[in-house]
Length: 172
Image 1: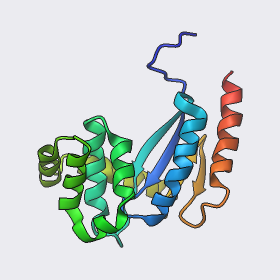
Image 2: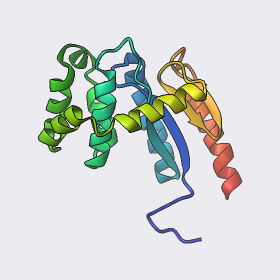
Image 3: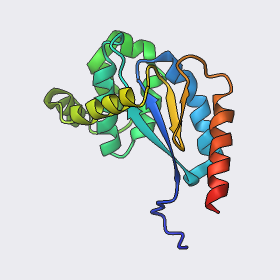
Image 4: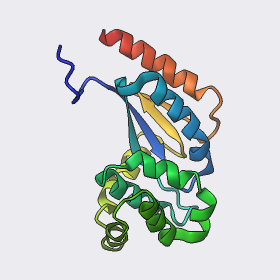
């Protein structure tokens, strides 16, 4: 077994998330803790599930994709989620502003939001989410198990860790 940096054996935790969702902001602490605990053995994969009740969520999902492309996906997600109220008020200009603050190409963000280059990814995520029964955010999927954090996040980190431990032990 080679330990090259391009690991394909990392366990994947799909995080169905919406950047205008206060519950997703609360979930950041859990995600940080999981990242600290598992490092590169657990790959956190951002999946988009913008909810219709949040009018800037769809644009925010596209912006997150642009941030991923520019190499700072999670950093961007955390920055926007940390300021959910500003997104509520500021909409797309706020999304571009955050990109600039993180040293990303803000002009490219602006263009990406106008030309809609990431819409297909967001739509595909949303369709897949609906197909597997995601109804709210955050929702986690790990090892084929769906954990709904939109209703309650109580004990979710422990539950994810339990499943991850079991699956990782099975890999060794």
